[in-house]
Length: 218
Image (cartoon, rainbow, N blue to C red; front, side, top):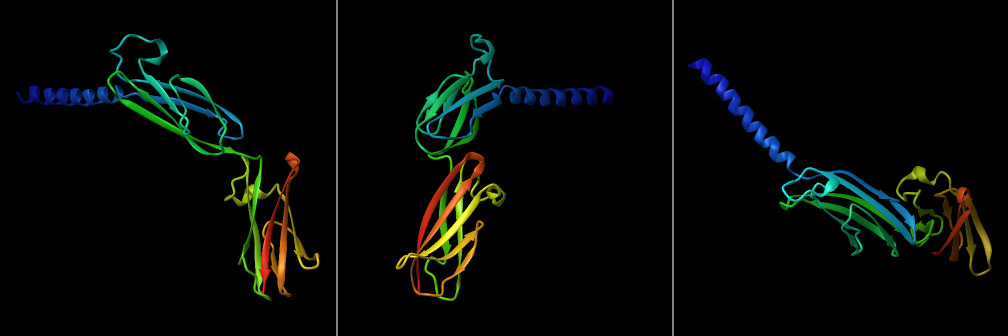
């Protein structure tokens, strides 16, 4: 009798595991999501494509879609209900592009990508610390650049940029400092109001951007 009970217990265990596997396999699964480009300059057409499998197949056959309903949300209020779609962005910003697939039984799967839409091919913003200069103490000059190829927080992304700083005393137009490099220091020795002029060139793109800071030195 013992010999019979043990195989039966093993069989029941296997059946229980299989039932669990069957339930997992009935969930829809997104097997591919393609969003391109993931960064662009206004206006930008972004093409999307999604593929999914699994889910409840009890409804009428619909070919490769496997009875799954596709819904794209482009993050700016626009949507689409086809597996292959496109959207044109006319506003700058970071947008979460999501794909949701739903089977006839209401089970869903979701995947997401983020696209970055920028208004210009490269932007820069000059900075100074401290913003108000104390005579005889160094002021650190720096800037942040951003483009589809430059992450402003990654130091290595600045390696192909050429920076020029000029410091002009506004009262008489005299240049009191000129520097190259991303983050130079300057020490003011005379009180007054100064313009800090930054020029950043990206030779590979034949692009130059400029920014200006005003600093009071006392």
